[in-house]
Image (cartoon, rainbow, N blue to C red):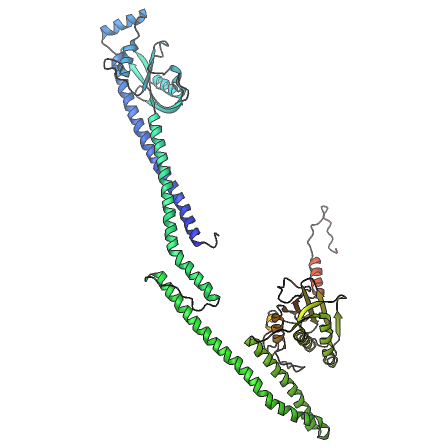
Length: 548
């Protein structure tokens, strides 16, 4: 179906290309959106974290009196200096507002001095982030923030969530202490946004692919439908419906194609009609000439018979002329009969007179009619007949004529060597093979040999006075029976003609009981294939055997 449907190929190709383009563009578009959303969120988060660190630095660096009071209070354990700072940073002061992120403030010098908002704990800080901050503190690099994306599982939550953690160092010059400040920005909203964007891209891409496939289907249908109609019209035209034409709509390329097709069909119908008339005239001419020649030929035949019967009273030259005229008249009569037979085939008037016949008897009668000619050419017949009867529904006269033509041809080209006649049969067919050992056939001549008046060597005269129509008529007789007449030959190996006929009239042939190639040739080919030399590796010790 893929090879036969142009519309399916176009739609499928468009669909595949559309999927590739949509996937590439969707991936690129989603990547750009993802980068834009993440970068924007990160910049906003870093800005918020920076502002909070400034606020924390201001809160942790009061004037001297407040610092002394705070320090004394801290030593007594009553107030943690980070409490007010945390309230200020998280916005849980007077207005009661709540920010979207959580904050963790640590004092590495005093492990117990830490504050956090929300569900954040000390263990929520990624170890790599804290290690970087501690390195910055050792190098007195207090202004560098560090950010990292990580899935963090907070206490009281069942599933981890993606969080952007920004860490920074707040240095208090008055006290010489460093505070680690961590901001935890949840990326839940960004994840939902990107998920929705991804889903939208997939849905839009799928819809676009289906839309492109539908467009390709409609366009391909619009183009392929006229082509399909042209193909159907061409098939009907090839089937003999010469009045088949295409409808012309518009003036586009398809309309011009329909016009060209209609002109071609009209010219083809005209040429076929002219050829049919010419063929009819030729057949009628051959038939009329053949019939008209019979009357003068009969008169000439009577006069020639009289001269032939009285040839002993003539001088040697006149006697020889009478004999030559008699032989040529016989050949002329045979040629005239063959021409009449060919004209009946051309006119479609040939019919079969079928009857159940043992093919072996037909072969024996044909050989009996050919024995005199075979003796004159020093040729012997070798018969290979089966023991069981080979019954078939055939026209006895036509099959016997086929065999006589094959035998005459084998005698003429067999160069005095034996002619082998083989009969074979199976459940569906009977076959007769006539094998000679003469000059053979060249490559391609196995089909030309059945053409009318064809000769392999035009300079070679016919030794038995054939008309040149025998094998052509034989093939027509075989075809009329629904059978095959085939030839095989090789130069110097002779030739073989095989006639295959169905046992039951009208049955289709599926094979032949006899091989077209003679058995001895097949055996020779098999033997040569078996004797093909094979290069064997030498033995491990280096001892080869060249004589073998």
